[in-house]
Amino acid sequence: MGNPMAQNLLKSGYPLVVFDVYPEAIAEVQDLGAQVAESPAEVAQRADRIVTMLPSSPHVREAYTGATGIFSTVKKGTLLIDSSTIDPAVSKEMAKLAEKKGATFMDAPVSGGVVAARAAALTFMVGGSEDEFPAVEEILSTMGKNVVHCGAVGTGEAAKICNNMLLAVSMIGTGEAMNLGMRLGLDPKMLAKIINMSSGRCWSSEIYNPVPGVIDTAPASNNYQGGFGTALMTKDLGLAQDASTATKSATPLGSLAHQMYRIMCNRGYGLKDFSSAYQFIKEDSEK
Image 1: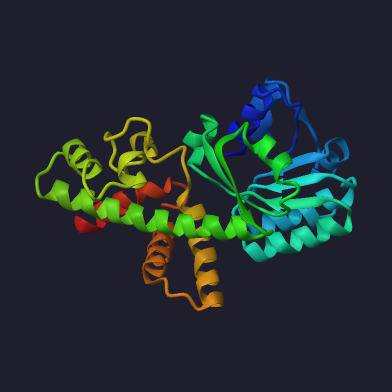
Image 2: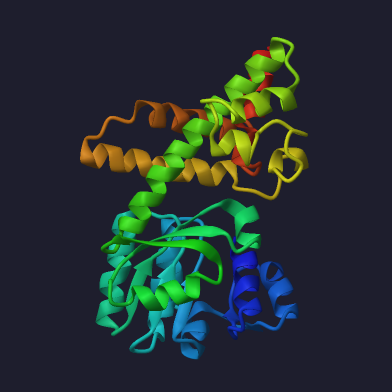
């Protein structure tokens, strides 16, 4: 996700200083003109607008509060935008630490996946200062088509984990329906066409269909590579379950989806796109 997001910032004329623990991850944007830093601390020394995109809460904590983290060198007045999907409580924690440094932290998780990131068509859900939102919106609009202010710090994360819980449930449902229809003798493209002109239509069926060959641009047609990993979806579903427990909210389908994706990780699907739920269902049906 970070790579195409960075490329779109470059295309919009922003000078970039980038860092990643895996040098190969930033080689492409370096070739396009980005400068490379040796640590998050160096990024904070050289920039006063910083966007972070990391896998989970521990990674965010390390990037911001570690020995060579952003907070070790951050300048007063710096705007910190975190597009990771993490625990809302961690976003609030980072915001308090940023305030002590004279900086502003905003959570801005994204929806749309790698395909939307490449097309600068992401949706950003922003939590934080209303006064700072216009500055955040200006930057994020170069990478997305929707930038929505959700409220205080942490509300962007809250919106994201609710969205991803629904996405996981709808993907499983789409996979089950497609598998059932095909086992009944229906052509997958014809079935998808019917679903997408009927009441079962959803993003998982229309844009990201999990059956190989139905949509050429979907990860399913690329051996479930190049999308949103099953392990990351499992992490997000865990965040949703933690939130449902904390708020005493009933999420039975979200809980079942979390269990299913955890099983998928244990069976080797962790690095495959989350739409491989269809493949998991199909293989289970054939036993």
